[in-house]
Image (cartoon, rainbow, N blue to C red; front, top):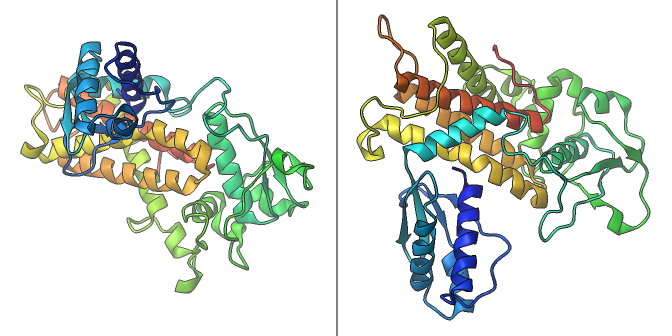
Length: 380
C-alpha cells in the first residue's frame, strides 16, 4: 500500500461522491497523499477535503466525512481505518497486510523498477521536455544528468544538451552522456538546468565519480556546493567512511541490508513479508521497534511519490535527502529490533518479515543511488 494507491482510492471516492450528487465539484486531476506528520494520526494523510470545501460550498469536515464513507465503502486492501482529523484532513491507518503488501511490492519490483513508470507519459500540468540544456559546468552537467535519469524512470523521454563542447575529462569521469552540443533553436525546445556552479578548482578525479556526484547533487540548486575546501585538504569529509559522511551512511545502510540477507541465507532462511512480531503488532507507543519500523515503512512508501514530484521541480537534492532519511530510519530499525535469530534460536516468521523490511530498505537505497548515478556496493 503506497501513497499512490491511496491517492487512487481518494480519486475514486471523489468521483463517486460527485456522481451521486453528494459533492458538486470538479474531480481534481491530482490528489496528494503524504506521510502523516509527527504527532499526527494514522500513517498517511490528505488535505483533499480542504481543497474541495470552497468549490463544494461545504465545511472541510463535512467534505471529509463524505469522502471517508466513500473510501471505507471501497474496502481498500491494507487500509485498517480512515479518520477525519484536524480541520478536515483524511488520515489513513494501514493494517499489517498493508505494510506487508508494500514490502512485497518493493522486493518484487526491485531497485530498477520500484517507483518507476515503464510507459512514456506526459506529466500533468507540465509537458515532457524534449531537451535538458545546461552550461559548460560540471555541476550543471551532473544535475541535468540526474534529472534525466529520474525523468526516464517516470517514462518521460528526454535528451541532454550542453551549450558548448564540454571538457571530455570531467564529462567522462562524472558519468555524464551528452546527446548534443550547441544552443538549440527555439526556447520552447529546451529546459535550461543552471544551478550555482561548482567552485573554482573542482577536481572530480581527486574525489572519484560517486563522491563528486554526491557533492554536486546534494545541495539545492541555489546553494554553492561545499566540497570540503574550507576545512583544509577537503577530501576527508567526502571520502571518510564514518557516520558524519551522509553518502557513507546511505551506502553503508544498503551494504548492511545486503549483509543481513547473506547472513540469513547462511542460517537457512530467506525474507518473507509479514508481521514483525510473533503474536501481535504492538502499538508504536508501546515499542521502539514498532516506531522505527513504522518510520522506515513511511520512507519506503514515500519514494514513488518523490520520484513523480521530481519530474516537475528538477531537484535531485530532494532525492539525496530522502535517501539519507531512509538510511537513518533503517539504522534506527536495525538497532531497535533484532532482525536475525540469536544463538540457538530458530528463524521465525517474524525474523523473515524483519529481514524482508531490511531488504526492502536496501532495494530503495540502491534504486535511489542509481538514479543519482552513484554505485551501491554490497560490501564496504
